[in-house]
Amino acid sequence: MTLNLQSDLKAFSAQWQRNIFSLVFYATRHVFQVWHEATENTISRLAANSADVASSLEQSSELAQEMIARQNVTLKNQEELLRHERLLRENMHQSVLDVQRSHEETKNVIREQRVLFLEVFDRVASMVAFHLFGVFGRLS
Image (cartoon, rainbow, N blue to C red; front, side, top):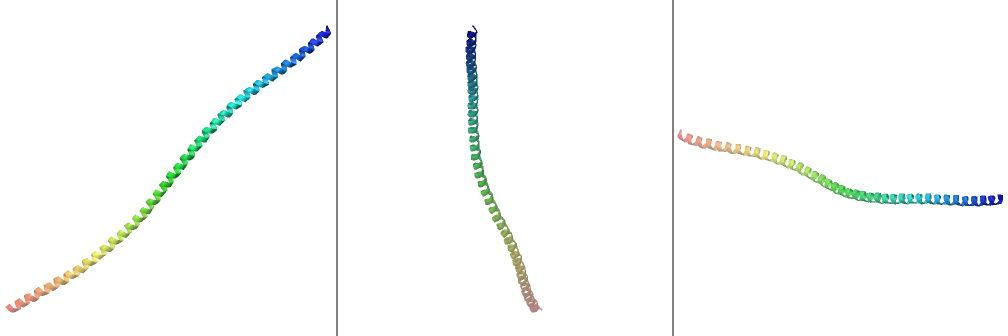
């Protein structure tokens, strides 16, 4: 009977080892399967997030390019305004000089006309005096 007991014990031990091996194998397989699914889910989420980030970066890049284009237009407009401002300033300065020159010319013409009027009135007065003297000289 001891032989039977020993062989039963060996058979039980072999069966127990197979059961333990199967249990460890299935547990390891289950853990690997859970880990693999979790890894797949993580990779899927990372891929989706990467796609979202890439899309956001692309939109940001397009907006930045659009903003740069608008800023370039604004800079060209500002340059044009500065050019017009410079031309206007030059024209205004020239107009001031022209008005000053015209004013001086007008003052000179007025002086000359005053002198001419004085000469004309002086001659007229001389002629009137001469005629009056001639008329009074004959009357006396």
